[in-house]
Length: 262
Image (cartoon, rainbow, N blue to C red; front, side, top):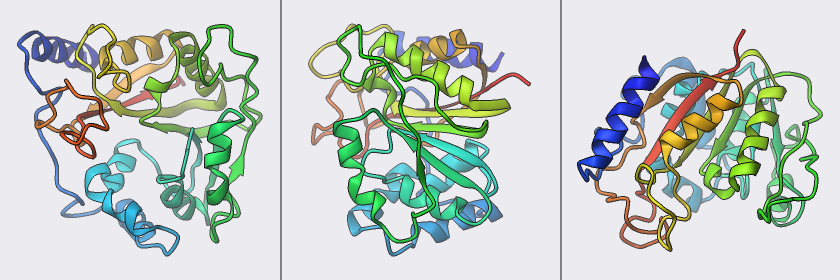
C-alpha cells in the first residue's frame, strides 16, 4: 500500500506540474540523534574528510539517510560505485570496529577515481570486490555487473548512481545486489528526480523517474519497504541538469528502501 500511495502521489505531482516529488525539506542534522546517528556524526568529524566533503553535509544529510536505510555499526555493507568516496569516508569509520565495508565498481574510470581513497588512513579495512561483469552488449558506459564474490551482506547502498546505467545494466546491478544480500537484507538507493515518464533530453540525463526505479527493483525480486522525503528540495523545478548553477548541490533527490524477502 505504501508503494502504491507513493507512486500515486508522484503521478499526481507530476501531472499537476508540481516542482515537488515530496513536499518537505529537512534540517542538516537530526535534532535528537539516535545512538547510531551520533556515531555517524562522529565519523563526519573525521580527519580524512576534506572541507569540500564537509560543505556537502547539510545537503546530503548522511545521519538521516543511513538511519532510514536501517544501517547499524555491526552490519556487512556494500557501497556500489563509491567514486571519490564521499560516503566511503563515513561508512568506513562507522563500520570499522564491528562491521565490514565492501565497495565495488567496474574497472577503468571509476576504479581510478577511487585510487586516492584507498590510501587514506583509517580505511585500510575497506575491501574492494570485483565487478565481475561481462563486456557490455548495450553500449553502456559501465557494463553489466556480475556475481560479487562476497559472503551474504546486510545492506547494499548506492548514492546518485542509478541514473548512470543503461536499463539493461540497471537490471544487472539490481540482480547482483539481490544475490549479494542475505534474506531480509536491505537495498537503499538515492538519486536525482526526473519527472514521471519524461523523455530523455539534454537536461535530464542524470535524473531518473522514481516510479521507474521502483518498478525495476521490484522486477529483480525485491520488496518495496519505504521512502523518505529527507532529500526532497522544493526549489528544484526538475527542469535543469543537476550540475546547472540553478540547482547544483540542491537537486531534488528521492530516497528508496527495498528488502530481499526472508
